[in-house]
Length: 251
Image (cartoon, rainbow, N blue to C red):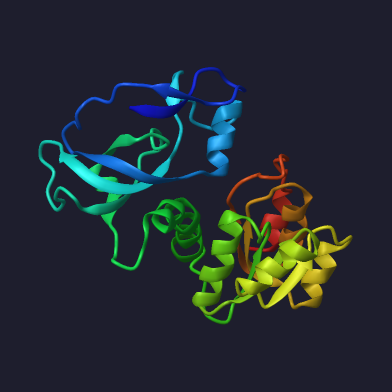
């Protein structure tokens, strides 16, 4: 089968003929219809991701497609099922083997492209806002990088959970994208005084930061006592250093 494989760190992946074994115990074999691409894939190509697979490897963390074979012990799935799955690797190919425990059947109204792009972006934001931050109706959520993949889903989910959503994005077009996704207030991320802008809007209860850099510290300073800080990633390329005394006084 054909797969996009990375043979050397820092080089472009190439379309390569590879062999795929039959699905192992607990696995599904899937004919891949669509594969989501994420910032993590780019980090893998650059050798900067926290997990470093042995070379060569096939990119693609999340897929959608049709079940073509069942490994030993698999229950709850049948040949021909439309599924979405998270394998972590191997999705950018014609076929893939995935753990059945990481696969879900698709509802009739969801197509393969939607399903392939859904899992990481929406799953990250749902886990962060619901399970970690325990975001409550009426609280204020601040989302950095709100026009990006996880940022947009955080805006949508935060709004759905009943929060007041403040978003930041760079430039008029991205700001409008965040506003269209449901943000109540939108701040240009290039604004000179982010802390002041957030305080003028009443401060925030939850910070959802996928960008990193100085914005995280400014947002922390505008966080109310008992606030929650969600460190999602460092798309801006700078890992911020947070003074512990700020965490203390914010309780």
